[in-house]
Image (tube, rainbow, N blue to C red; front, side, top):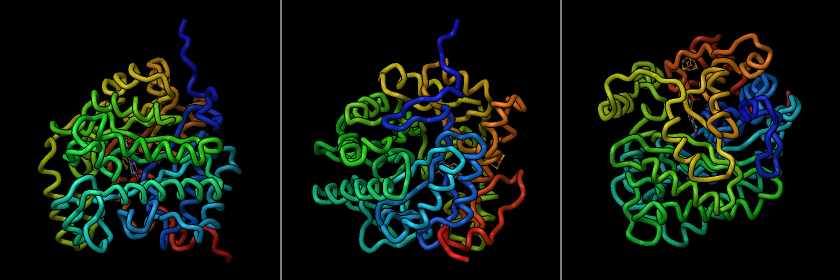
Length: 411
Ligand SMILES: Cc1cc2nc3c(=O)[nH]c(=O)nc-3n(C[C@H](O)[C@H](O)[C@H](O)COP(=O)(O)O)c2cc1C
Ligand code: SF4
């Protein structure tokens, strides 16, 4: 007889008790205005909580103005607390919990011009920032590391004030903390570069500082890569070292993702991103269209989507640590979620299946369905550039008016 929990069982993640084990992944909603949440963002996360998700993740809250990747992206500051409180209150009103994915773009700044060179683990040409005019990046100094650590801590404290239940430090996909973990960026020859233990040193220090500051009130989660995808990138053995270091630093949960926004979206999604949809969404900007085309030349030409495509990599991390882990990557059915439990994962995290149907968890629970209708076409990814925000192309369009009003605006 299996001793694995049901995905509908409650679970404790640090100080947080979740009503079940389904988590909505951080997935850029593009529902913000002037760096603050809009009514569209409130509606989206309220729908997810009403649909049965235990913990919903607000994507992509920058820890500072220069930590943004895109111009409208939320960046944490006291001025937006009223908007954030409307958002957290809406989710709590539906019995759900809410996490803020907090991040610094480092040299991954594709939509904002930063003054001077962008920060990263190393100096040199910044291919991720070329289109935005951020041509050069510079290796962070000890003072930069102290500053960024403080910014993560301050952001987590403001998240607590805003009513969030958790913060998720983004250490995957090519953002600043991943620019340390990944050998695709990090060629430093000090104690922050070289082997995997050294490469995770700074991210682990940031997490420990956040944990010390807010850990008795908020769950402190980290999203990491189980592998980067490209041959010279981090692999599952590196991920084991990363996970062990973050376990020692006090993380309450690791979300196991993979891939990088520039080099390997195919690996992140387990299927190719629709380049035509992306080019169409970027409209008449020929340079961006060229960049999209060029980025598609480095990955595979074709690919067959496989449910639970990170399972083999994630198992290696599961075997290496005892802390709670969340399985992510191609969870499309209740069978997949149950499989994640029998494989020893504590939670399941879904992005596309929940973009397609915010009510999926309740439908799983009631028995109405066991399978998501998401086709893994990835066309939603292009909608992160749409003025009405991210949506599934199989569903009705979003109401653009909701994305033009800040969450706390008074009628
Ligand atoms: C439209 C879209 C936007 C995304 N934006 C983010 C993001 O802002 N932060 C992040 O960590 N991952 C982002 N992702 C990746 C997802 O969190 C997740 O890692 C990936 O979609 C694989 O999970 P899935 O198979 O459940 O979709 C995004 C995914 C999609 C589809
Ligand atoms: S557009 Fe819809 S069907 Fe296609 S991957 Fe995104 S959520 Fe799934």
